[in-house]
Image 1 (cartoon, rainbow over the protein chains, first blue to last red):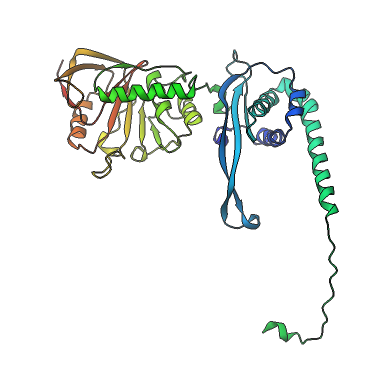
Image 2 (cartoon, rainbow over the protein chains, first blue to last red):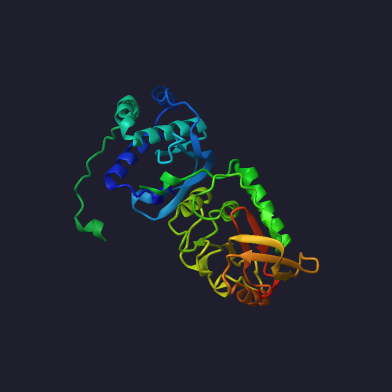
Length: 167
Length: 202
């Protein structure tokens, strides 16, 4: 529902989408390490709350929409600097029921919107995070590769007339 | 900039806050014409009267289309209400279940709003109208009907002059018709469709 609130220029939105996608997959341990200096209680706009969301899919990615199932999601919204009304608002939607994870992601989102903090956090959090996720993906890929089976297929004998199949 | 920039929090405590608001709304409709203090245990947006914003924050949810008067459309109050309740905003008053009329905005014609049907009179609209002041027991309107022992008087400041005539038409269509809340910055008055208003001149 936050899409309706985003009237940022396109590029800024794309940037934010990119880091939101990273943060949503971030393990709590990495968030904790990178955000050790920002553990103060923020000003809540919406306290962390857990609920269900319906995930929809399309058969083959193109077919009709169907309801795949419900997932547990925790969301929150906060502002880091209560004295400054125009301080950026951090928003988080994460899988699962971990309120602390949602808070850390929202804090990271708020900091990344602040031009003075963005570059530092990009180095300390986003870069290692990207590396970590790539590493995980590579590992998973490798594991999947070990189960790969090559089927020996016998070439069909071309004995029949071409018209046989068309009937 | 996006509308989240000016966003403020809602209820200090979601459950207690909304229960207190709901209790006050019930009380207001049970005692038509009695001004009641709205418990304002929340952060309020800059626009709109506090009691009206609190009432809608407590009553709205994702299934209730709300229509805002021109002065409130696009304001912080509208974004605040959408953010905290998840309600949908409609431009057409005839589609809305709740109508929020800001101070100074034109009153929609009550008979154009959703009236409900004889089988389902509950499917009607509820109109929250902002006014300057509400004074109980002062000469102005004489109210009669269920919930009032004999008669009650109420003086309302800052309401469109044609409201009593619109109201008599609304009252006549009982059991259909709309219910109205009048809201100042801190108080609300409930006017269920069963209440009769006799306006005294002067």
